[in-house]
Length: 181
Image 1 (cartoon, one colour):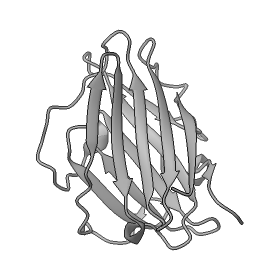
Image 2: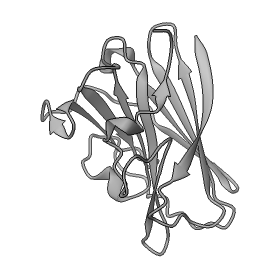
Image 3: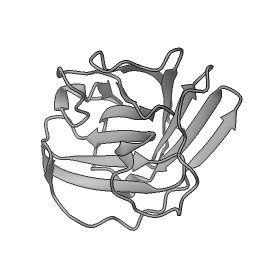
Image 4: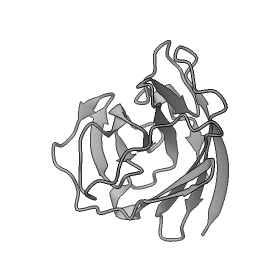
């Protein structure tokens, strides 16, 4: 691996977060350009509703339940790629030409080996993203997570929240810069 960073996600201030929950993401960049994202969610009170195992296939709407997300871009470009990974196994990958403007409608031939491990109050969701799915020279990202509770409420976690309402697509939320200029 070329480099590694551990980053803390914060809940959006407009939406209450479950008591005691915290989220960090370890980002690892491989020599071949692949990214490895390891989301670590601490839930000491057992408030999070983890989705039941599901087929490992492309699935829309994952953000409506507990889900890990990454938005990856090249600086100074409007285009970006969105990756969604359910701890239960389903995934999604979307390409955008600009803010919320889909560049395509199909899913790539990506079958991520999403791993989810529960160890007491800590759950780790590991998401590998191969270099072929990333924009060339990708080094800017918005890392995020949607947390659903047993009561049905959702909180929205990210590195930065630039808007009054949760919006992971907003480019000012792409707060992670990796590598050299």
